[in-house]
Length: 192
Image (tube, rainbow, N blue to C red; front, top):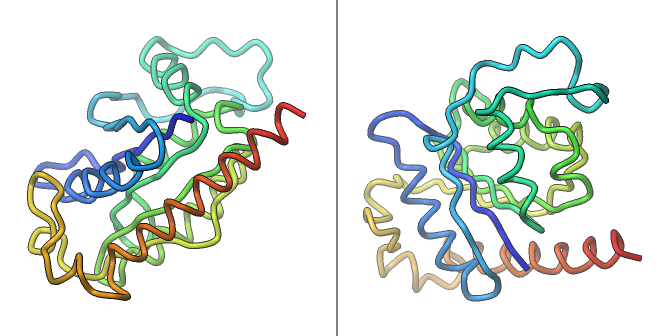
């Protein structure tokens, strides 16, 4: 079982990468995990003449093909997103818009941060991801603490948050366990 943790921000001084490292550590306890940083997959704005899912003659440009080939390798995903202007980041939405069937019937867990824990970023992803055939798991992790103060550059959560009985570590553990359940269930259904 192979899970991708996608870092959904490319801006300077971002903190989504810290959150992603924390997530990778937890996912790595139950599955093979790889970080996909959208900084490493620069793509032009989506400008294909036909929606990717409806274009049997599609020939994506090399930068996009590289992203599509990479994302297709996985059984499940965690998208780590900031909230920008009541939505997810433009770079993450653009990456999703290029997908056709790479995430078909595969689960996605959502981890967000921002002033309201990224709730509106999660809501926008819950609307967009079914368009590419992905299944979002019921929970989402809304990180309401200030990420830069709560998680260090190596992805370590502050001890007082880590030990809190109903804190973010507990929420992440539950979300990862749910994601793994969905990965197994959907993988079995796809191969049946």
